[in-house]
Image (cartoon, rainbow, N blue to C red; front, side, top):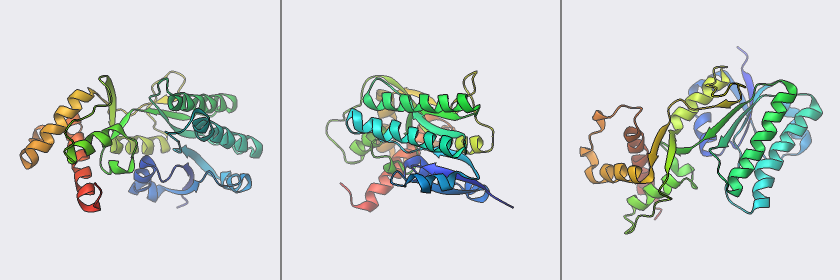
Length: 256
């Protein structure tokens, strides 16, 4: 049975790492990683016969110009190469629950380019505005504020510093991977009438104060934490998995 070909940027990202470990993806698709340093001819040669371009690459830190170059100019380059080669692929794009920061605005700009690309070519792109990720192997997501909060607790920092006092959305990496697999199979969960913005069905709303309260109880109660009382799709259950995955990582890596 012939496997469909996927192109992916940001294969070494947290999401890319977890997605490419998915057995159903390995069985159904072949994939090729597109790297930023690749030349135009090399990228163009991979476009032929591909089914989707999964665009996970991003920069989160740097100057306004650096973020624009990484998150906007690179996206524009990929679109231009498609136009030049007439190999128009749908994007599966991981955007962000953006804000007014330079990072947030760069992600929004790239998203707008992809939406215009889809409208011009009548291609149905899939854009996911992801909130804060949680889940196993969160150490792969170094810039994640939940990772930092767990790390403060694990190393018993005297004064815990919260990112802010606002309520945020949280989503588990496993739910993200399963939704991306649905998207690859033509069953994306669309949230808008124009069928462009998609969502992860299982999201959780919480303030950092609430998250910290749950994490402290998980830490203090250890094996006595009443995990069976919580459903596997609950925030508490997912924070438990997140925290203990990081405990295991830091206890075996020698990192302080």
